[in-house]
Length: 258
Ligand SMILES: Nc1ncnc2c1ncn2[C@@H]1O[C@H](COP(=O)(O)OP(=O)(O)O)[C@@H](O)[C@H]1O
Ligand SMILES: [Mg+2]
Image (cartoon, rainbow, N blue to C red; front, top):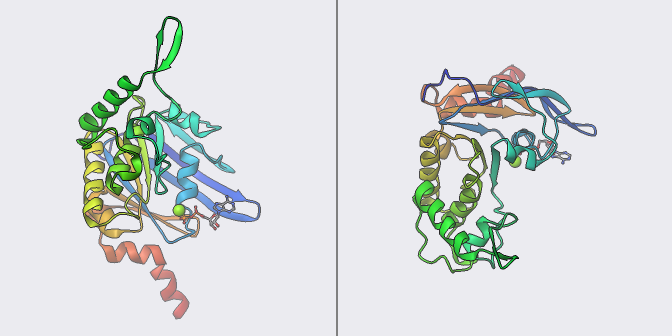
């Protein structure tokens, strides 16, 4: 899709302080439909704090967020989900002893009423889980009965993503280090999933330490350093060298040496 289109979400001049610690200072971010925006930067650069503000987990100390050009205030992660913004975290919040469908509907279980009594609709949850995994993600699990703990890392990732995309309102999906715990094959599958979701018109925000992943799937790269945005570059117009230089502050270092 065109990169010149209106962003779905625009964060402007976001500052976040935790007591005396300034985690973010005047940071901007734009996310567009059908685009993967990678966010890179060293540990402590402010990546997670920035996306926790976008997903309603933290409230900014200063700055504004616009959704479709209108001011957006969120007081909780639930507010963000309602507005179509959700996240999949590296530490997958899946219940290992439950099957994939139960995980997909954890906290929002489907029910049916029989003779005035409400029951969990396990059959419906299972078929819906199968449908969203297959239709949205192209993933077919061998068994929908298995405990989630028996799934591969990539399959667990798919279940966590399916939980987010089951929300029909979903427009922005944040993924914080989705491949950090995965081997090469599972990583390749997860990158494929990201491309599938981009094709469906979602805005994907990918936080990653892996420049391999970032250069494989992103359209733009936003570089963070010490709580600030160093810059945002178009992936196909940049190089690893340039991005690495921005991450470590190469130009600054050169100045310090002189
Ligand atoms: N809840 C918190 N309380 C205090 N300081 C925090 C909190 N969360 C993050 N920070 C600080 O904010 C800065 C940015 O952290 P973070 O956003 O986690 O960086 P990144 O995800 O890029 O590694 C760090 O200095 C970190 O110690
Ligand atoms: Mg982080």
